[in-house]
Image 1 (cartoon, rainbow, N blue to C red):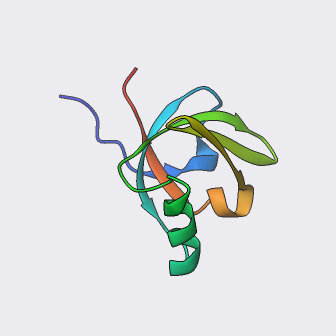
Image 2: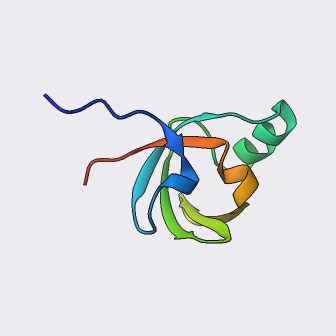
Length: 80
């Protein structure tokens, strides 16, 4: 039996890991904009950089999120 993994903000994940997005805890307009950019529930995201800002790979794109926004985007670690 595998342990239960609770969603965490993207800022909690280390550079290089792959995460599956669980939910967006943002204002509706902010969440809609992220979804337009491909950051939506259920999609896999590769954390490319987690420092002052968060750079993530989404499909064939790279998206940079302000830390304040990334703290409200939640995901779970994908198995290796």
